[in-house]
Image (cartoon, rainbow, N blue to C red; front, side, top):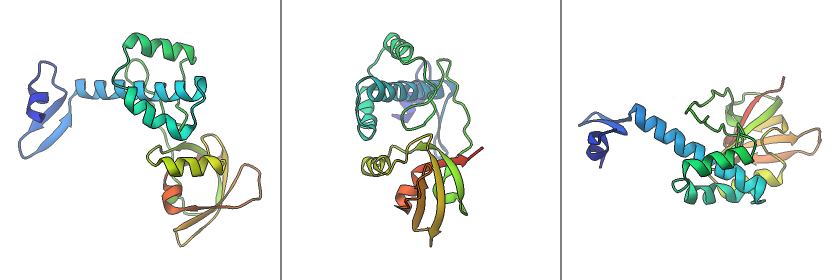
Length: 180
């Protein structure tokens, strides 16, 4: 299959036997187009159809390869051309550009402090729901109180004094930036 993708008229990959495979320029453009479709669909489902955040990723996975460019543009226009999806991930621009972000996983934080949640990984539906239930969503202020042996992270959401304990797996799904 890799040889077929590499030898097509517009190859999506560059393949060298025993050396591996890389996306070609056309492959990168196509990948970003699929990511754009996926994130716009997630945003549409969340904002317009009131899907719970923990359900939008799986539904978007089913639909991302089947929408036309016309439908993509209409969804983007209806949503006001959003720049981020409900998980806080950047939506690639129509011309295939992906903005750089400068966040880091909560698990890489070495001390206490106040941060802003930039994004939440959508890889584990149960943990997405756990984080949402705790109020940990993109844009929220998060005070890191301690990380006990790097296995449990004690945090407070917003201005609340209530301490929520996150497992390492949950904390690893949260990307943070310093509060400005």
